[in-house]
Length: 280
Image (cartoon, rainbow, N blue to C red; front, side, top):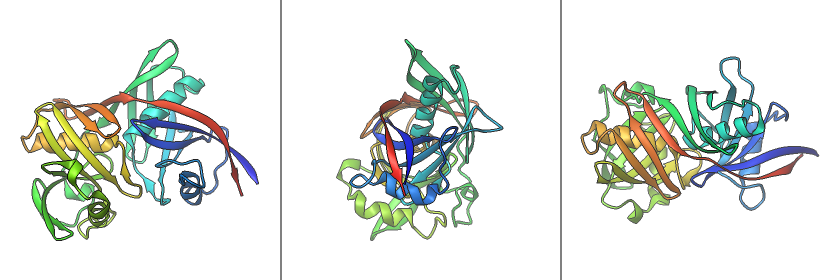
């Protein structure tokens, strides 16, 4: 048995087990992620995040879902990575870069009394090109188009923010049977690599509420990339402005789609506890 040191952190309740591989060795993250994420037999979380060295940025982040699949990007996780890098002394500066499978993300840390309270992340531009998701449609975009799941027809917008999202406006996200609909849309034939799905309602031009079914993890309390995708999708369809508070079950994120095309996400990052996990 080997002892693995970890940190439990969350962004709006979207919680992961983080391992600093500057110091630790994780030879099989695909196998470890389901075990360590188990909320009854493991540490518990929405997945496993590895924080390690990068030759392109201050650090590299790898994300593994609860089913062991690797995700390209997670907005809540990258904020927590920024907090850890600063507070651990790995990168003691307020402007950081983090390498992900979706590219390099630039972070601006809001530090008070030596603690990181909020993080603003440059999430890059959204893409409405189905090839970027990827998505099996011949059209150049999938904006407010029909998609069927579980015998119901929805109007959805597909958008990539480094990972694939399907944004569906509904009268009341809280009323949906998400455990039934989420898996059907996640594995819809139109999405060969699966998709994250957000059910949303615009309460005002600058206020949106949403629920999310994340590819490989199921329903989570928050999804940073999903919140960015939601604003981009609703703004592109003329349902909201280009800046809004996105209200998730775990709390609020501030999302801005700047005039230069860049999406910015701002929100909190919280450290919960440190511990040791026995790896056989």
